Amino acid sequence: MFAFTRFTVRRRALAATGTAAVLALTLAACGSDGDSGMSGMHHSTTPTATASAGAGAMGDMPGMHRAAGGNGLADAKDGYRLTSSDSTLAAGKQTAYGFTITGPDDKPVTGFALDQTKRMHFYAIRSDLTGFQHVHPTMASDGTWTAGLSSLASGSWRMFASFTPDSGGGKGKDFVLSRTVTVPGKATRTPLPAATASTEADGYTVTVEGEPMAGMAHPLTVRITKDGKPVTDLQPYLDTYAHLTAFHEGDAAFAHLHPTTKVNGDHGGPELSFHAELPTSGNWRLFLQFQTGGKLHTAALTLRVG
Image (cartoon, rainbow, N blue to C red; front, side, top):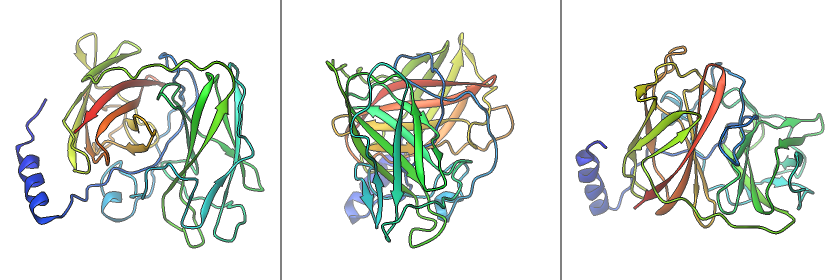
């Protein structure tokens, strides 16, 4: 762990003046497909390292998204709506979720800006925060998107779409919208693992250092080792060395941030720095995705936010 003296003092000062820190944890999503090696997780093995555009103060920080409002739990915002005829999806086999984004004119949106090399990012998460999937859907000419999903366990799932229109009233604004679907069958709820500072994934040890407070900007440091040795061969994945996605226990509120560490070829690690502002106290389930040797790994752990 590292010291938070400066941030503690600043937090007290902000509380006294009624202001708040503005380092933003963005609501965005980036995708993948393939097996993670951890039960219930799904991700990609294709490396990419092209540039993405940012805007404003957060866009000037390496690897950070433009700020997006809300927690992703609504299906509509500022005239944009996530619509889908899929209210149920089959259990136990590969399936697809179809959806459309409509704009303020109620017509399907077909123009989307690139955000970290993709025009749409999509997440699926079960209500007990298991079954994490992170995919890149494809769009037909009429604006219909199809997100291919691997096997889903029975229960309630929430589907998140993250996008940035490149025209109209929402041009340049980041949106995260979601809807729930039901996967029929007997659902067995998995208890959320206890909060911990480290976890294992594909032979890698991932350690998260930091003690964030709800609504306050705090640093997080992620350290990646293998067989007790520092990992220094992280490869760029969608413009950055790692993606850290968080879901809040209870309501599955969604938050996502990237490391501020500058990308320099296949030489990432062992430490990655994040600016985090998780809006709500309680337990958050974190999913960290990072790439080595052309393979994407997904590590999951529970973080307690005060």
